[in-house]
Amino acid sequence: MANFKDSPHFAVHDDYYTPESAWTRISDIIPKDKLIWEACMLGAEKSKSPDYILNALENGGMVYDTEMDCLTDQPVSWDLIITNIPFDKNKKIPILKRFVELDKPFITLLNSCNLYSNYFREIFKDNLQYVQVIHPKGKINYDKLENGELKKTKNCSFYSVYLCYKMDIPNEKLYL
Image 1 (cartoon, rainbow, N blue to C red):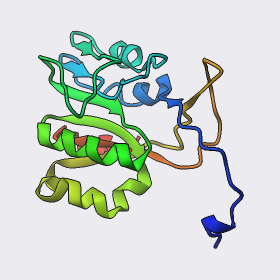
Image 2 (cartoon, one colour):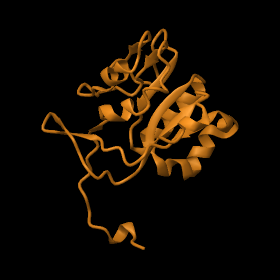
Image 3 (tube, helix red, strand yellow):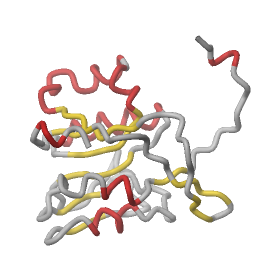
């Protein structure tokens, strides 16, 4: 088994965006008549995530703001959150805590390894009964922002899952 200390050092690159296919995969699970808040858009002017989610809706709507910090603000009106939270643990933990505090339904993408972390149980504590996980087939390959352009990637180094809270999704829809 390899250790990370034995790996070569890689340059850190945090500008990845959710591809349309990630939201298309769960389009039949997204409630069609709700006002959805894409909560993690702070500074993400290049993200097309709101458009991709809106394409999955029929009568619902979308609210987002690239200047709104979801840790301190929220829209006046919204029914559920659908977003891809930042990969960085120091950003992810406070955001997940905030979402649980808001106590409204949400779906967010995250690295599957997060499910096994100590902080995951700590965040959800008495609310674990409201947690569901959708397991997609294969990996989600995120779009990388390079030189102001979004570029498709291949061979993501981790598997992503959809973490769902208070969504009441039928069990047969938890494996895509």
